[in-house]
Length: 153
Image (cartoon, rainbow, N blue to C red; front, top):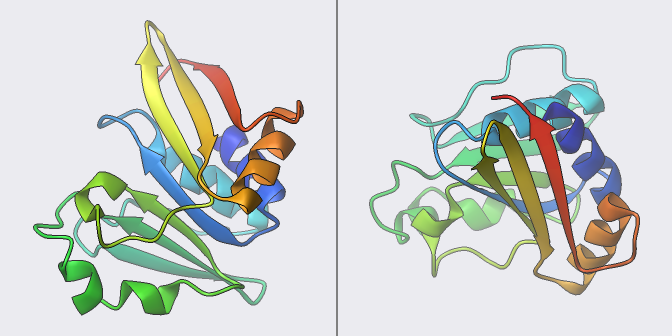
């Protein structure tokens, strides 16, 4: 999943909104870790389950990693100032976006992670016109969705 995170960052050009969906343990935070490391982050990367957001500044680029698992109501997004984090020059990863349904703007892409037997898989779908170009860049085939399998948990 770390390699996929690097591919996502490259295709996005270091900016955009990415939803990460999937059961516990499918690799959402691992994907973000790969993206951040690819951008040059050297420190630890933890899931922001209790803080809701972890900010990272990497070479003057702001990256925000959200985990909405503990969000009780989508209205809490307004209270935490979610829209203030989204800017043209930021990169935002949102785990458990379904918890914020109705309070989140559409993502550029959604990465759905799942177990496929002993492997983990990813299905990447575009939700915006920019996202379609991003997905085509990840897939390398010009389509609006991509799929990948990765070994092991």
